[in-house]
Length: 87
Image (cartoon, rainbow, N blue to C red; front, side, top):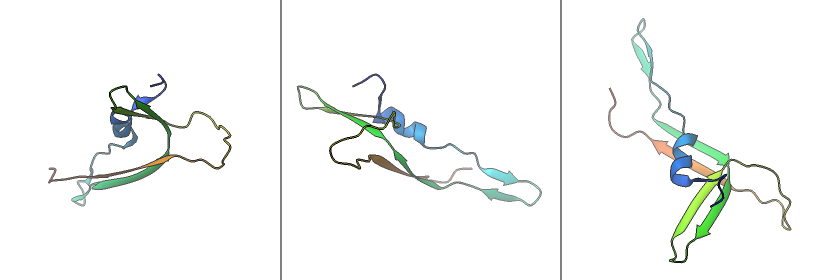
């Protein structure tokens, strides 16, 4: 895999924002993010080893490259949902 790319297992967690709960002591209200739905462009690297294992890598788009069939867009949609009660 090109050194500019990260394995998806490392890239994906970095794309999801980590936001703390918002708490207003005066009114006693709390706001909590319970899920995310993020769609973002991505450049993909798909490498197949001699033993058949596949390594997926990705990186935000580095530059525009014209291809014989335009447009070519790659995007990834990430959906994360908080499970369980967090106090």
